[in-house]
Image 1 (cartoon, rainbow, N blue to C red):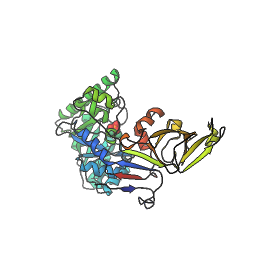
Image 2 (cartoon, helix red, strand yellow; image 1 turned 45 degrees about the vertical axis):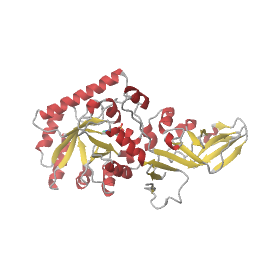
Image 3 (tube, rainbow, N blue to C red; image 1 turned 60 degrees about the vertical axis):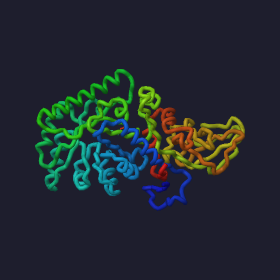
Length: 403
Ligand SMILES: *Cc1c(COP(=O)(O)O)cnc(C)c1O
């Protein structure tokens, strides 16, 4: 089956799939299914899979990704904001949804009405939620967040048993899970490996200290993408891999590393997204003429320059500069001059075979013809692939493919 759905959330009726802007993103849902299966292949029976779809599923579209996650047997979804959970509920997603960031008290009613699962880590919020839930005649499942070394949100390991008890003794809330998050699980440096192992041990002690009170901690979970592959002992009852689901390898945990370590069970992740555009104009540029704002780029000889209608307003960050190389007819060409908000220029060289309207692949999976991936751009620009795909703006329509 081959289908195409075009989603452009901010401008709902502009794109019908035929009358579309030159710049768009393909999202390969077959690759999503592949990546989910690759992760599932690493889990022991009974370990649940929670798929983070925060930040619009890392830029891929939360609703379509969530539907596919459901089809592939995911047990849980995770979002950062309550509003993201509400979007999924409105789209008919009935799977449990964990809200990873701390909610505002003003969002409690929405959390309860939409059957979202909040993460809480202090007595003030737990008591406030208990009051709201009790008044609504409800009992809200909570996941208790413990900070074992990430330094973000979470109670201290020492506070965890008391908070578990508070939840246990409150009418309006119940303890459905306990979780923590790793700071350096994607690093292979010995001190980082030692740090992660200490986080795992601390978390195990926290779970035990809750059990020692006769309280069942529920679903215990810790593993992000890197830990799914690198620390099987951290799988506990559920894992929360985001990045690998979207087809990228975390930090030092590259494909070469993984498959070198365990050639019997090879892993092959496939990026979901490519961003395409088109050469909408080609011009001849004379030696000495400059291109774009700031006149940073000056032609060293008579040459051709192409224009594509995509810029930082679409998520091609200005700081990528000439590190951004695009694929045209199976060859790489660099950006020349500063990336503008809505357009950027491509250096085509002296005797260019490129013609007007030729397709441009800004980045994407190799299987679909791109010679540069989001990971390549991230490496060159000093960032991570998460930031590249999250940064692709909503005005770039997503075209969903079954491949
Ligand atoms: C984003 C997030 C994840 C997923 O992390 P990846 O590195 O993308 O696998 C898991 N848990 C929490 C708490 C997160 O915020």
